[in-house]
Length: 217
Image (tube, rainbow, N blue to C red):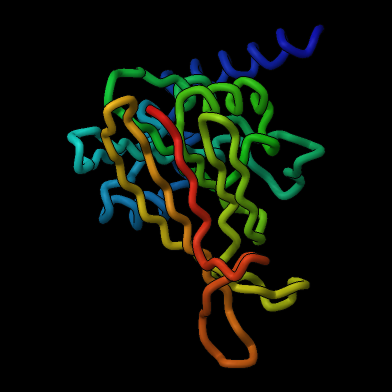
């Protein structure tokens, strides 16, 4: 069976399982997560595999943050090589409208999933900002229409080498000029300093503490 067909079968089978009687078996292992997440409006279900929160920006545009689930199929042998995880098509299907800016946030990046190519293509086309974790190191990439931040980890395992706790502060704003609407994303990375015992700015080689990104929308 060719790979695209096999992938589509996996995606379709997951969608059918989540929407049917077996959906309760997929959501059961996430009960503890949902108990925590519901306090922040971020709980999920078999029929609603992602959550969304909307914020109005200064020019009236809507910033829509979508939190996706990558653990419907997961186990101890998951990796970028094995790629047993699966988002499912519902999570990377977007309705594009004027003045709606999507941000996608999830734990596992696309390269860990069976439907990686389809998901990555959709994220690049529809989301101005992509936020992922799992890697425990900071990595920021920018394309013509989208930026991706691999966030690092605030509390990595101390046995990890190198052990560098990190977090990021994001500042998002919009501006309307005579010729375009501009989305500005400023990323302020912070890293733990063993020398001073506190979190400090993670400077670029040019001694800048901010990574400034801009896109048209």
